[in-house]
Amino acid sequence: MNRLVRLAAVAALALCPSVSAQAQETPARQYTPEQIDRLIVHAQSGSAVIRPQAAERLARIGKPAADRLLAMAGTSLGELALLGPSLIEVLGRFDDPRFRALLWPAMEDAEFPWRPAVSRSLAHRPLPAEWGRLQGFLEDPIAPVRLATLDALALLSSDGDAARAVPFEPLAVARLTDENDVVRRRAAVLLDGRGHSRALLWLLEDLQRTDTYFDLPTGEAARYAAANALQALDIELAGFEAYLPPTTETNQAALGSLKERLLTRARASEAKLPDATRALVPRTVPAIARVGGPVEGARLGLLLKSCRRGDYYLRWTDDDQLIIGYGNPARVKLPEGTTRRLMAAADTAQEANPGKVYWGRPGCDMESFRMPRVGQPDARLQQLILSKDERPAPDLRPAALSTLGAAMAASIPTDDVLDASDPRTRELAQRVRGAFASIGGPVAPR
Image 1: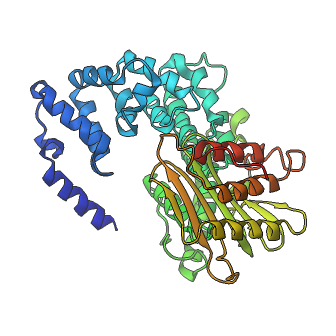
Image 2 (image 1 turned 45 degrees about the horizontal axis):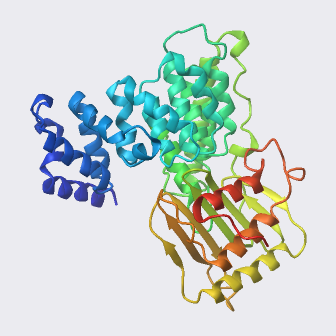
Image 3 (image 1 turned 60 degrees about the horizontal axis):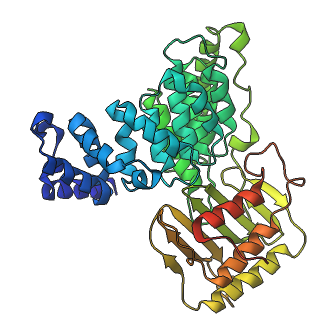
């Protein structure tokens, strides 16, 4: 797959001389307005490979490109959004205060569609005066925003400014219990860089994951990500192979060796820390980050991915459990018969839309309903998918799926039943309804 991606990139560059290799780049002073506009078009509508390359080229050009982008960005968030995520993500590289004046209102507007790109742009060279403003986004509903904010605060905290009331390390420790495994791994790596190497045990835990969300190999993806993160720290994996199950003999031996090595690293780093911060990282990995057991009997699924409201992985099982998240998911017991009633609503949704499995257009918003085919309860679950880009699509979801979505949301227990300390279950029903509304419009009452 990587080879195919590389070949596609080479082919695209061959067809697009203005986005050629950096070594052949025309000096910035020689770029014409027409060449800059051409790069902007590539950054907005080129292939997935070309868009970020063209945007990076514009950032290297400097002021001529900045002036053109400022003119296009206009004075409203609607005009800024039209630049698209690739261009927005590089605006912070121009070191131009006019861009930050545009980006911050977008960051603080929950309805702006490209907030992850905005957060990465602001995080490129964050300003000391932005510390408090950034810190609030560590609790943002969108994981990429939390991730970029963590990086921005880490960068700011390295400048030696002792006047800040809240040091970086406790903020990073709090992210070790983030509901998103990507954020947890990044927090662990950043803490290791501050002498809190015990956090790398979070990555060791991820190396042992085998979880899935239906056919999505979430555990295998975590193994690869953790292995790559450790290797980036020059930590030898002792022969661990991420593509193999962690239960193989070779991987078990590698995990044992790696655990000893990481504990040695942790003890050595902690010995150099002040007494007051030596135990900042918990001695044991919390439940949310630990390896979880298999999910048995999942009969219905709902995956929501909203570019404004975050991601939600939900499953309903034969024995009336609601499984929330992946990895080591949260589990909530539901009233008897809940899943059976939802499966009846799923049958109705299929019968109302015979043969239809996809609505909309590709984009950053998606609803994926997993359900048995009508009359085939033991067959492999099928997906009904709604997808759209940043533009509103109020009539996207058919009525029967809206009714099913409302029933799924209504089956989520009230907040007084759920664990308020678990970020995955906190205000879950409200957040799920918000994600529904953001993607395909409010779900109909049950």
